[in-house]
Structure formats: C-alpha cells, structure tokens
Amino acid sequence: MVTLKELPEEEYFLPGNAACAGCSDSVAIRLAFKALGPRTVFVVPACCTSVIQSPFPFTAFASPCLNIAFEAAAAAASGVAAAYERRGVKDVTVLAWAGDGGTADIGIQALSGAAERGANFIYVMYDNESYMNTGIQRSGSTPYGAWTTTTPTGKKQHKKNLPLIMAAHGIPYVATACVSYPQDLIAKLRKAKEMKGTKYVQILAPCPPGWRFPTDKTIEMGRLAVRTGMWALFEIENGNFALSGPSAALVEKAKRKPVEEYLRMQGRFRSLTKEDVIVIQEWIDKMWEKYKKLQLDV
Ligand SMILES: Cc1ncc(C[n+]2csc(CCOP(=O)(O)OP(=O)(O)O)c2C)c(N)n1
Ligand code: SF4
Image (cartoon, rainbow, N blue to C red; front, side, top):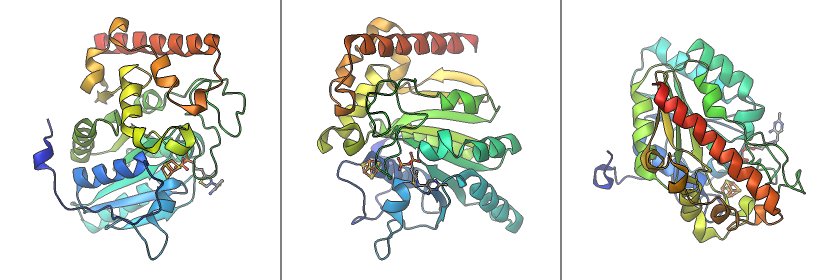
C-alpha cells in the first residue's frame, strides 16, 4: 500500500498551466509524475493534456513530452520505446497519455496494434467521457444519457468497456483507477512500470465544465462514481481479474449507492427521465454481475 509520506515532495507537473479550475486530468498527471518520477517521457496526442502541457512559455511538464497527432499516441509511444531499447536505455518510462476520444475512438487502431506487438510502454487513458478540448462532443466512452453538444437529448448508447477490450489482447496489465483514490492510482502505475510489454490504465477523470458541476466537487464526483458502481476499480494482471480499492467491497448490490446520487450532481444528466435512470442502474448491475463472475473465474 502506498503511503502519502513516501511520495516525493518534488513537483514535476508545474503550476501556472492552462488547465481549468478543478481539472482532474491535471490531478492525474501530478500523481503520475509522483508515481513514476521525472525519468518519464510523455507521449500526448491532441487533447486537453496537450493544451495544458504545451503552450510556450508555460510548458507544464518538467520532463520530455512528445505532442503527436490525435490518432497516433500508441504508434508514437511504440517508436519512442523502441528507440530507447535500441540505445540500451533502461531507466526511462514511456507513458502515452490520451483522452477517451484519442483512445476509445480514433486511437484504438494504433493502440490495438501496439498491444498485439507487445510494445513496451504504459498507456493511460484519462477518461473525462467526452471530447472536451474541442467543446464537449460525445465519444465511445460517454455514458448513456449524458448531454454533450453532439447528443443534445442525451446519448443513446452505453459506454464502451475499453479495459475489457484491452484485456482481450492478452497484455500483462490492465487497470482502472480514479483521481479520487490517489494511493490506488499510484500503486497501479508503479506496478505497471515494473512490467514489460503494453500496460493499459484507464483513469476516470471528472471534468467540471464538461460534466457541469462546481469546480470544488471534482474529487467528490469521482468518489460517487466509485461508490455507486458507475466506475469500478479493478486490475487484470496476467489475465487474472480482481476488484481493487473500495470497489472490492461493493460486489453485492446492496453495498453500492443508488446511481441517482451520482447523476443528480451533474448538469449533463439533468434531462434524464426516470426510465433513463433505470436503464443506467440496470447497466451498472449487469456490469457488476460480469465483474463478479470474472473474479470468481480466477
Ligand atoms: C484527425 C483529427 N481529427 C480531429 C482533431 C481535432 N481534435 C483535437 S483534440 C480533439 C478531442 C480530443 O478528445 P479526447 O481525446 O477525449 O481528449 P480531451 O479533449 O477530452 O482531453 C479533437 C476532435 C484532430 N486534432 N485530429
Ligand atoms: S475541459 Fe475538463 S479535462 Fe479539459 S482542462 Fe478543462 S477540466 Fe480538464
């Protein structure tokens, strides 16, 4: 278990950057630096992170970062990892850091290819559940019922389960995390760092302007996502599935909060009908039945 005391005091994610107030992507980046240290090379496609990181003279990362085309994070990270391997450099962690649009949608081809080749890097998808950088368009990772500018009456499809899709590639490590549980997040990134091959970590990243909630509620929103079961924390290590952190105690439905508690805190769900809430609750319960079975299968 990671303790807060052992975390480095140094900050490699620098202040004065372009992130919105309450941005959990920036919290995740800060934690990733604390978990992995400054010998980390980021590969960032077009997304909020590239805007946060790159504008000169306010560049926000105290380590190298390759900004790359929207669809190309995993392809570029494969190349960077191969170059370090060729040069015999062993102490650098290559970390692709992409949004849900750049991962679940346009980036999935490069990511799937890299996973199939076993390219040696960590891929983080910070999941703010929409294309935020370009003005809140829906992605394959936007949940059912959510308002976005391209789903003005609420999205009609459920969120894609990318962690399980990545696990189907047979990669050594898949994990989900949330900025509201920093120790769990750090422990998972550190574990990924010690493994060879493609490691995939999906971090739920509540976004105040995109989800329509006050900027001081970011961490609370992540906690509610986990406590209602809307977001499950788990690891799939060499094919073995295990719920982790607070999610490990939520297998029985009665332990989870009703999803309404999460939905009513966010403006993006303001127009949901009672039937929509039932659809979402049933989807959660079905997912958890699956997780329960996956856990038992191990
Ligand atoms: C091929 C291509 N299509 C569209 C764009 C415009 N674009 C830049 S960032 C972005 C959205 C990124 O969304 P996501 O990956 O979810 O990251 P977020 O902005 O939410 O951090 C889009 C559509 C682009 N840069 N390249
Ligand atoms: S739009 Fe959301 S993810 Fe993007 S910088 Fe702002 S708070 Fe962060």
